[in-house]
Length: 284
Image (tube, rainbow, N blue to C red; front, side, top):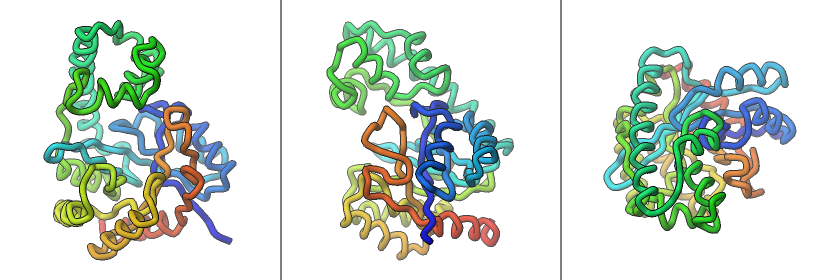
C-alpha cells in the first residue's frame, strides 16, 4: 500500500487559515502518513502541531520556510526536522520579527499615502495575532473594496516594484541554509520554478546553494507542470540532493490547494520523508 506525505504547509502562525491542530486533522482525513508544518519565518505553531500529531496518530515534522534575498528576487528555503530549541534559530526569529515590524510600519504608511485606510490593528486582527505577511495586507484591501481580489492586490500594490511594497531585510540563502543545518534540520529549496528563472538559471542556482550546504529541493509541487517536475527531478539527481515536495497549503488563502493533493494532481511519496530522516542520521 502506497504511503504519502506533505512536506510544505502553513498555519495561522503565518499566513495560513487553519490552526496547526486543524492541519493535522486534515492530513489524517487525507490518509497521509506524515505532514510537515513550514510556516513563514516562525516556529510558533510547532508545539501545538506536535501535540496534535500525538493525539491523532500521525507523524508531524517540525519545519520552517525562510525568505532569503537573492539578486533581484526572494528565495524560499524550507527547513525540515528542525530543533525548535536551538539557540541560534531562536535568535534568528527575534531578528526576523524586528525586521517584519519595521517593514509593516513602512508598508502601512505607503498604502496610506495611496489613499488606503489600513491600520496595524486591522492587520494583527486578520493575522490572528501571529506573524503578518503580505497575504494579510491583501485580505484587508479586498475586504475594504480597494481591489476585487487578492491577485489584484499583489499585482497592483504589494508585489516588488509596486507602490505599496517595501522590501525588508532578510537573511541570505547561505545564512538560511547554515542556520537550518545548525538547528539539526535539512535545508530544501522550495518551488524553484516560481522565481522567474529559466531552467539553466535554476540549475546554476541549485549548484550555488549546494555549495552552501543545501541538501534537498522540491521536485513535486502544486503548480509544477509535468515538464517542470521532470526538470526539477533531473537537477536534483544531478546534484545528488534529496527530493522533497509539498502542496504549499494555506487554507482559504489558497482555496484551490488541498493538503496532500494540491490541485488534485499531487502525490508525494512517504519515501521522501524517510530518505530525509536517513540523511539526518548519516550526514549531520
